[in-house]
Length: 213
Image (cartoon, rainbow, N blue to C red; front, top):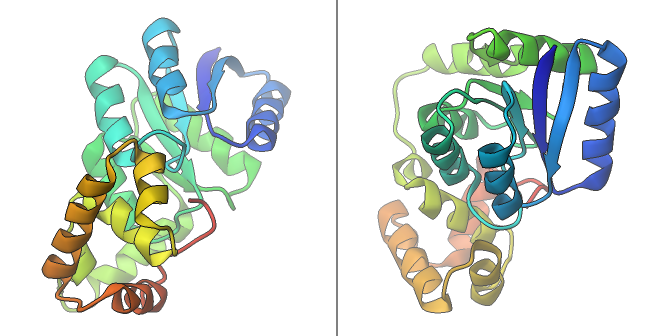
């Protein structure tokens, strides 16, 4: 039986995932966490084969969390389950060490298949994401402004574009307001944008916003 950990800040999501795994009778949910500190404590204390991880939990940037998990527990496979359907998120997650990437729109059967595959040492990406990536390969290679950002800069950029204030971003990411302001200045410079309004328009145009922040 595959031992699974669940990390998601929404209780209803965790409950739904738990029921899916319990119905299959091939998986055992051995721990749950609702934020980043609890997730790190869980992976260090509870042996498991797979962690089903939401990218946008309170505490820290999800990509950074994947890197830390891979460092703390190299044998634990990470399957990202998120609302982020944009290819850029998947690329960053896999580079950080994730073994699979699914959106929360995926069917329960696909989730179970993904967990089985990554637990066996494989890599899984949803069909929709694979098609999106294949289509991108047919286009002329182009580096978009947001692709030049670091993982932390990318997270701050999205939060700014979503309308969060400097203080709100600082609180959400456990940073000082001064640090967030520095990130903001660096983002504007790297993306060659004159002001926040330009960032909002850019994020909307490239479908980089969702409701999962």
